[in-house]
Image (cartoon, rainbow, N blue to C red; front, top):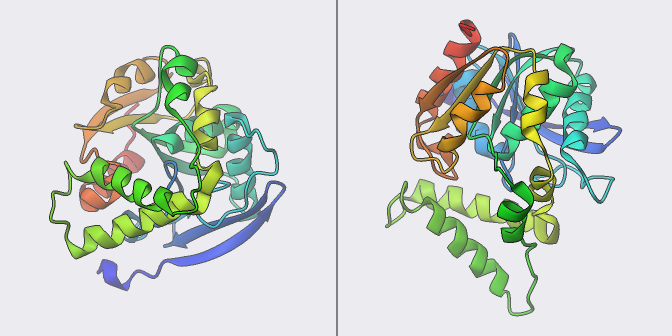
Length: 274
């Protein structure tokens, strides 16, 4: 049945530049915000399932995928939140539920905190949080250094393939190789600026923003996700939240078990229980 779901692509103009997005289905709107440094492409497997119940949209974060680079060189988490609010307005949506994964989870939180009237229900999966984000996080974030021998291309492949190998064992299947190919390309498309969303995240005081969120929220993580540890501290700061340890845990979580992930999302949207 999901093979018949047509995922379409489009651009929309916002004050922050052109944003590229994928969309499918009809019904209540659901916005998907991806992690860095991939794109809305990562959501295609789960979109095919969600589209049977929702009007689902996955937008490329500014500077990633096929969206314009941020107009402000030093984009902050607040800027990303405003951009996603502008995206919803540009496609004629006043209020939507929102799902965010990793970096996208933090930006989804900022959207919900800054624009509570626009977020119906919130699902955050693997929400980044550090006691000391500047020292513990930003010191390990570096831009891609372009090399005339193309060494940065192979380095990117080795890095991403190493991150998924525990979840997609070698020898990689044809589907895994194809997915890895696109994920490497999206990181390379972001290029020397691929790290900028991480920098914004490192300066983001998420714990001071969480109490501003009015939407019922599901705080979730994959069992083997490195951010599993943040589920309880994040949920404790929210007014209306419950937690879930769900499927997957790799960099490519939406490909691991899209059926299970879609089930968790749709169950919460149908009955938040908080």
